[in-house]
Image (cartoon, rainbow, N blue to C red; front, side, top):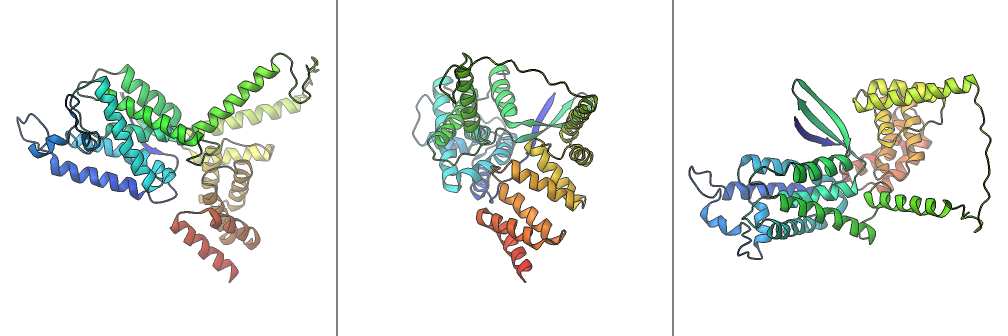
Length: 389
């Protein structure tokens, strides 16, 4: 079975120049140092061999330089592809300087881990890339990774939450279960992942990085609060009065046939919407969503599903329904880290298609306060200027 992640469900708000620069530097150094000579013992030119990490007699600079050397074309293509896939959004979150420092620290710690766990000479950016991938897991665990798979005659894609794909497939399966491919620096990989996860968790806990309600640290805190609350109330303690609470028997309220039928319709529609969005059949999912809110306008879909459907309705020209979906999204998922981009979209929709200057101005002004992407900010200001004139 062949498996390859091909994209993520989020895009950086700012151009990730630092990540692009690291990719370019890696490629340039590869072509300067690679020596594909038949019968050569080392894949490097003689003058570049000193920059490999040689754990038997290491020099300090080698803990950084080894991460910019690669064995062959496929080696650098694989590393740079994963760096591009996961590094862009990490770059956006850490900033350019912070991201480069984090990447270099990842190479150092993965090199140290390899030195203690394996000991053979090593080269390649995979340890530093593993650190970046671990950082992505912590910062964006609930985002979806679109995975291409090929199983015999079956070829398709599937969306998997980053927490599970990175945690189970990339870390556990590839580096612990399937640890048998020769010449793979598993120690460097595991050390890189460990550094990336622990370093970002620490920075979030200390407030060095702004946390959101969707990162792994926030998920851990919510889980801990629920655990503590369950422990407190499990023995009958009432946290509101400070006294033992009395056991109260609640009489079950029987539902009418009409209510049961409505509940079954809602549950079936929600299951169908989840299936269609997982299959990326967003047109069908949007139609089902419209049926759902006709039955019960208070129904809320999971965050990414609702955003995908709002975008689909907008692309189909169903502007009233799209605006309602965007409004519902902003009301219920106000802490979404890219909420300003949703507000920009909603403001443009009200301005250009629904002729509601008041609501357009409200959302565009809110977006302008938070947008960091200069192109989006300019678009927002131009639209505001068009409304005011």
